[in-house]
Length: 107
Length: 113
Image 1 (cartoon, chains in turn blue, green):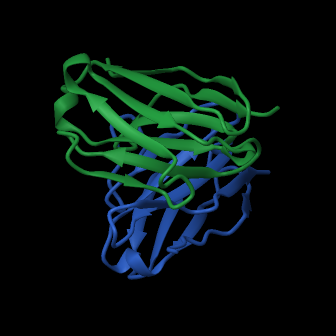
Image 2: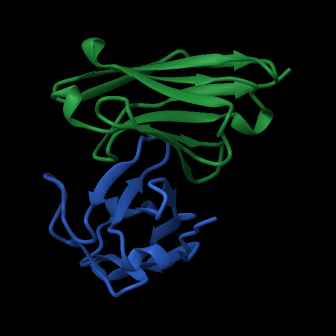
């Protein structure tokens, strides 16, 4: 079955840049999306179509796709960005898959 | 304002059934695919199923295929998840989402004897 691979954890100091990668074969043909989830809360979409930001998402959130890897970049990380981040993508059979999630810690 | 409100969760014994409902408001329901996503305690997000705008296409995760069934009532702006033959590993918070852009608050399903 199709899998998306993310690093389990990323740590940065406030003001630094955080990058979270997500790898999967179908990403060369399908867009990647990114969701942010804080403890006890529902997920929030922060990027879609690899790099598009929904309304209300700060400009410090950006994304890219380099073939089989999509990357979420948070520039000038703020303490409130501490959360779990999940990538997701459709596969070739019109089903969807989430990555395992990355815990972003703001030191 | 877009709202998605889930209901129907609770405690059920292994092998039992449960039907989750999600009522949508604040947008034209018939324009969007609708999706169920779940999260087991302490675990990551798992896509469960989705359904096309007119209900003609439905897709399921392998882990629920043949046991869970998604449907929608466009007149009532609702999407449902019929869950049969429930297992302990189906214990999770279940979220209704509009193409991952908007999410409900989630509803807890606990499968235990």
